[in-house]
Image (tube, rainbow, N blue to C red; front, side):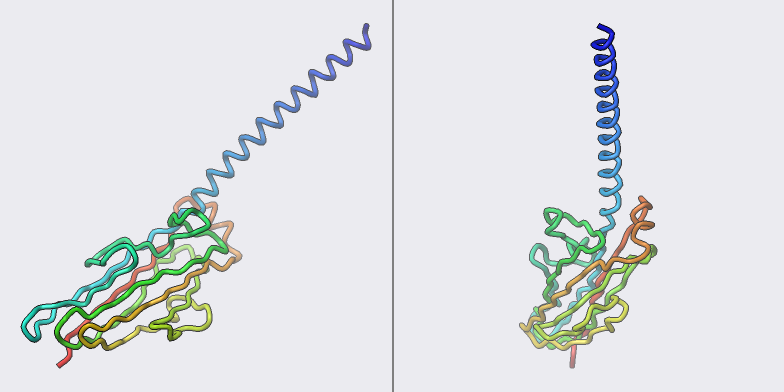
Length: 199
């Protein structure tokens, strides 16, 4: 009889321990999910484009910039960091990578020169690298910081279009854990385009 009571007590104790372990694991799982969510949502991208109007010939036209979703106006929030790993949400995390394609078209009746520059707001020193092509010609073959891509000056005749293909990747770095533990971490990339009428 005492043996049976002892076994029951041991079984209750084991059941109690299992419940405690499961509760602790659930708490850790929820905590990890919350931290991971805040870690990965460092993804805002403010893109600025400055359209130009140029009066030449009989009509007034402009430099049109677009991607697969929108025609840019003077200030848009672009979808640069859409990530297929996270159901195309704008989420970046160490090791994540994707690309962003946009087009610059001369809708004016005159030829246009334009200058394209990138500006990074990266106060947490995230190790983001880029490769860029324009009309299938590489501007940067190797992965480089956006600050290493010099300003691009192009000429577009009436009706012509330039196609830009920007690849991005977060290369893992020594400070990734520190970035992930800071809920205020963020990263911004802006694209500026300024054009002028020729002749």
